[in-house]
Image (cartoon, rainbow, N blue to C red; front, side, top):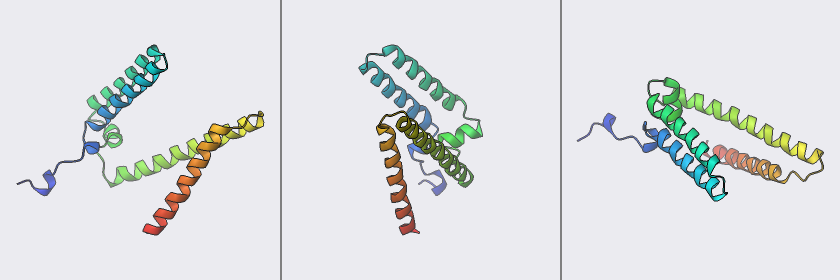
Length: 135
């Protein structure tokens, strides 16, 4: 019988998660570039992702890599992750709005940026509604 502290962690909380995820994403990138007839870029992209996988696999002593990769997570890391995600989202939505404004100012329709901005706005409104309902 296992003690409650010995229960198995889900894969996304194991030290294997980020290396395997990085390799899978690299394989998807290679496949997409190969389908688009740019195998050289696909090999390069897979190599970058394989290097990232190696960094996560062999850099297990780094608290930062453990926090990003999953196995070293606690309440402190959950808070750090939440704030970092908010900052990344703010940077991304600012870039999307800026790119849309640039496109429109140059006489284009700004369509891909408009769709991304609308998607993020709708996702935000839904998230606020769900989180408000749950609190």
